[in-house]
Length: 229
Image (cartoon, rainbow, N blue to C red; front, side, top):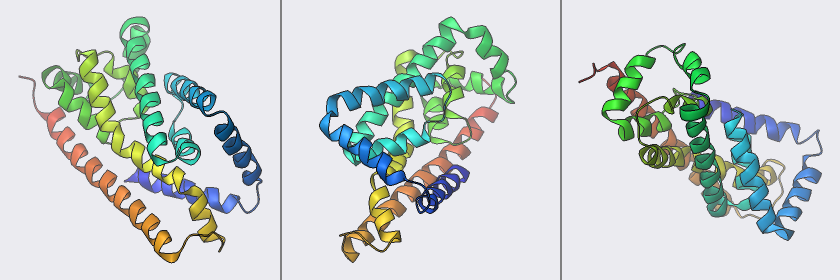
């Protein structure tokens, strides 16, 4: 819930600053570039996103940008592929190339041993819960999970499924950024009914993400507290 609140606050701040900063020119240039060089734009976006994940850079802004530039459907697919690829690359680095560095940081987290045991017992299920829950930082978790015994294929599928709801929310927010700005500025060509659908869609997506996150957090807490079999 805190992440959702922070996200909404960030978007609100973005709109407020849009009255004073020349966002429109920069975003217009980006939009034109994407429209004229669609394939190159996808590749560049994918590469930047993967590098950001590997270097533990928060991907929220990039995900919003994906929705803004590519729309809901294409943006969701592109962000999903990019984020999962980055997560898998970080997983492999943590497991095979930087294990000692990751171990030093993982053991500083409370309940790491119990968490490790829980994954050893029900790897796919627990990883899915961690992706749905906001308790664990996404980028660091990619490296930490490389220390566990989970199979790579289970990690990949659980990560993709678990990250999908939040990805949809961020992409949706990015895709309606222009419409929302037009509404706040009193302009735009959307009818009242179209604006209402945009708001209802946003509310429904937020509710879905919040409900799933709370359920996952509660279930994950029980899983981690259970003694290993």
